[in-house]
Image 1 (cartoon, helix red, strand yellow):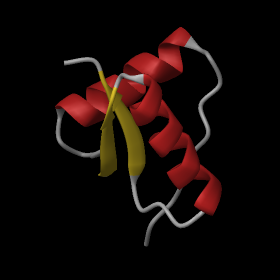
Image 2 (cartoon, one colour):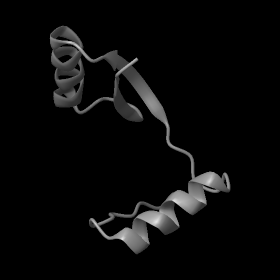
Image 3 (cartoon, one colour):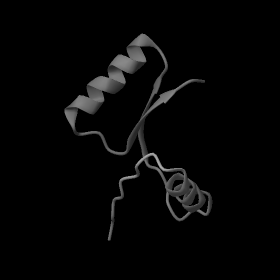
Length: 62
């Protein structure tokens, strides 16, 4: 069963979430990665607006 949680900007909650990720109990699913450029940000935003993106949309600074 999948559950979702919403984190407010709270240091204790964020640390608990980071610990779960480090332990492999929670994994982020990356659906699409775009470069940090005007076109990349535009494309990422366009995908977000479709409401059909699977996983997280990532802007890469590499």
